[in-house]
Image (cartoon, rainbow, N blue to C red; front, top):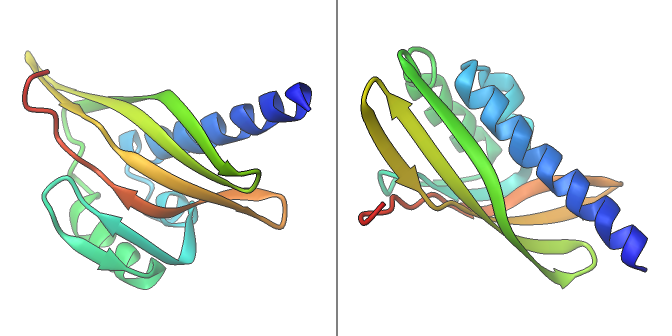
Length: 130
């Protein structure tokens, strides 16, 4: 059982790494593909998005050019398995633009369907105290 849990943790970390890659390289379609069709997403700015189509429309508006001069890193801080196929994933996000650093604390509720982990219910929250 422990070996299986490790495999799931690796797979979840791969999704988080794919978020980082898509964001840093402004790959809208790659980013959107990480979400379930009926996913919900609340952006760091508080915009509430319901469904992959809404997430895609918003991402197409903000991502191209949105990362100019910025690099973000995403690190899995903690995973809570709610069920074997549902996990709450706490992420530490650090964005650097020149000398400025912004820290975020996204929460990704991920579900595993057809052997693939997907972003299902997600909230990106800025950290005010670093």
